[in-house]
Structure formats: C-alpha cells, structure tokens
Amino acid sequence: MRTKASRAWRVIARTAQVSPGRGERWPRGTSGPVRWAMPSAASRAMRRHRAVGPRASSKLGLAMGRSRAAAEAAAQAAMVDAILAQNGVSRQEYDLLAALIQCEAGGESYIGQVAVGNVVMNRVESSNHPNTISEVIYAAGQFSPVRNGSLSRTLSSGNISASCRQAALEAIAGSEPVGDKLYFRRVNGRSGQVIGNHVFY
Image (cartoon, rainbow, N blue to C red):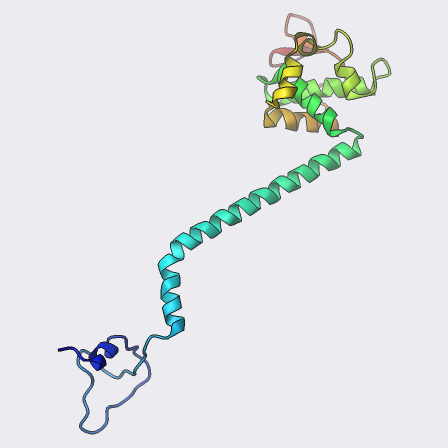
C-alpha cells in the first residue's frame, strides 16, 4: 500500500549529499543521497509553460513575422515618398505612370518597362512636350492605352504589377536605359534601340 510519504518521494530531486541517521534507511525506490523537493508553484508554472510552449512559440513567431512585414512595408512606402518628393512628382502621377507602363509593357522585361517610363520622363523634361507626367500621358494622340480605355480600366482596378511600379519609380528617379529618346513603338523595322517588342527612337 502506497503511503503519502512514498508518493512524496516520487517527486524528489537529486541534490546535495544527505546521509540517513543511524538506523534509518533511504526511502523505498530511491538510490543514493537525496532530499525532499515537493513541487512548488514556480515548478508547476514551468511545467504548464513547457506544455504550451510549441503553441505559444508558434503564435509569437507569427506575430514577429507580421511585425517585420509591416516594418518593411512602411520602410518601402517611406522610400517611395522620398523619391517622389525629391523629383516633384505626386503619388497620383506615380500611379498613372505605373499604370501606363503596365498597359504598354506589362509583358516586357523589367528593363523594357523602365524604358517606357524613361520615355515619359524625357518628354516631361523636353521643351517640346508638356512638363508634367499627367499632361504628357494624356496629350492628344500619344499613347494608345489612353485612346482605347485600357489605361482608365487599369487605374480603376489597381491591377498594376510590382515590377511596373518599381519601373515607374526608377524612371522618376532618373534611370535612363534608352537615354534621351522620346518615342517608342512596336518593332516594325524602324531603326532605333530595340528592347523586347519595342523600338525606342
């Protein structure tokens, strides 16, 4: 029959040397010097912590991942705002340029996308064209996505790829893969700098 004492000895912790008194024996089921160590509130809490540890760790990791993603998104937004401010471009014009690039070169290579943005920015700087992105893009007869309505639909849907947005930002920041060229069209034998399906001249 198990006694309270025998049950208590089952939670002993082996620690410093303790010798039994004369005529005493070590408790049954033990071997060697031990001392009483009844479970404390702290040890019970530790066991509960270990029991839920993996679940808690998973939740903590998820929270940290979300926090990191939010911080990266905030840093990206701050960088975009800084570049736009430095070049006197509004967020609306940035979105417009990215939408035009999506319509004109969404299926082209990244350098081909930047090249389209480069052409628009060259016109902004040219004395022979309007001096804002909006006026350049909406100038009569210049870009087919304006005429056929695809630019308006793209702006309304917001369906603009990350690469087209980055290409617009790079063009605004001054990237010039096609130098000072002011025009582009589908490759049709015309001389000029060919990038993918477009020739720039």
